[in-house]
Length: 405
Image (tube, rainbow, N blue to C red; front, side, top):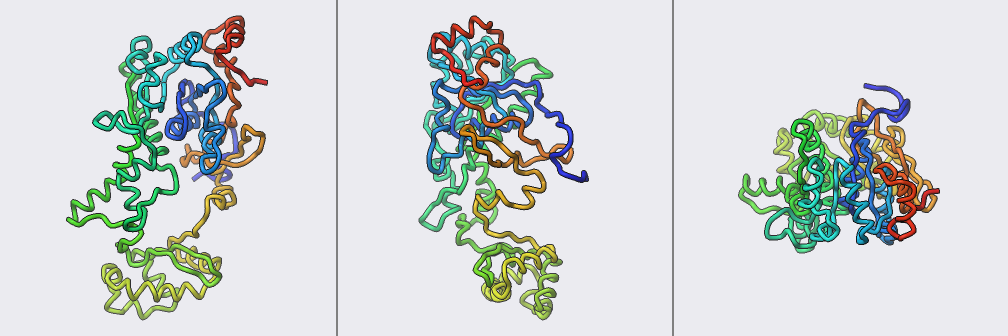
């Protein structure tokens, strides 16, 4: 174990340093893929239209998209529909190790950057398309997270019977981006042996089906149809949400034999240890209709803080019911370095979650804030061989835009 603040000390080397990624993406799945690669050390160049990625201007529930998925990236603002813009995009692709895109089918072909075109001039490039569906009858359909949650069984398992409900996060977008990263890293390792790139696809629908695998297999093993989690019987003796005396709620689990013994002794229910109904875990499950109301009476006599402290002492798993905004003040996230300071494009300072991993016991702290539109346009063009005069000509022609100060 390493002591101290996991984010303190000198900057640690990141595994993907030296890898350049060009990101043609919007919304969540593509930007998630780029974010993970950037946090792992890749130089991720986000190609934005001249007016900026449209998620910069979203309102309502989607207002946080750009701020969430754009840190540690460099921005180039480019008109890819113009001849000059196509030239820049091609050269940037030639000089990159990875290309990621999540636009609707056909769009990349219109700018000459579909996989077949790119493979002809950049055979070492790893090309990752993030789509709604993998190749098959559905591949040309447009999809959203909600669409695949409905058709993939997740909404059914989340909602009430007859009332399917979207999960409270963009689970398929985020995980679809993660699977893209897994495949990209595998392809990078393979390229060291073969010198060749790969065409990778990751998709929302197939990601959702992967999430549903355990429910699908449960139907096979038991021979019974799936029941939504909102009403299904628990397979565990105590695995429930309970009210406390001060009007709060705690989710508490008491599963193993040692946990059951500790619970009964701590809450003056030693007699339950010899009760024939509760001798086995299955017996306790079979008698949940009686047991859970009794446990609810016990917990209903405690305040939330007192009960949480007691459960912590007993090493029983429990959880408060938090809202997303509560996580900003979570003591574990703040003391462990799980949140990082960033400056938003509008100038405000805030915190955002880091990747949920550590390397050698340390978190991958933020390196750069979400960029302004075209903030790194000149630097990126210089990196890929454009002269000062050529950059000035591109700017005069309205092919590029820069907000560099």
